[in-house]
Image (cartoon, rainbow, N blue to C red; front, top):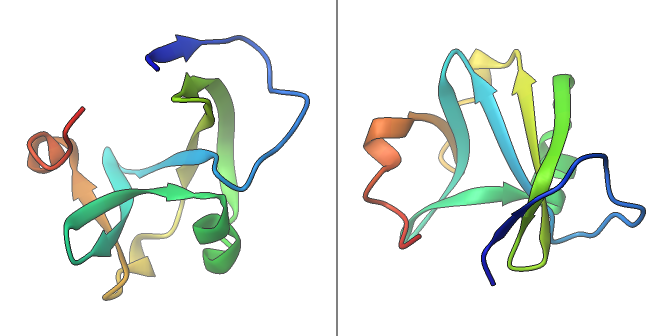
Length: 94
């Protein structure tokens, strides 16, 4: 299923929502054995980050997609990290 742009937040929240969190033009990703993964709602709950600006912007394969800004440069860990978009370009199939 393709990406579908939508205006306004969905009426139902899901645990499979994708979160695109940015800090200084870098995307926060979850590191795994295959490379990187976009954060999902359980990751967001685990990190407990304050979101500065949050926007719903559509759905991808039936999963709600959110964009947000965070102020958490010191978050770097083995499991999560901020990566530049150019570095991520070839890390995802779509």
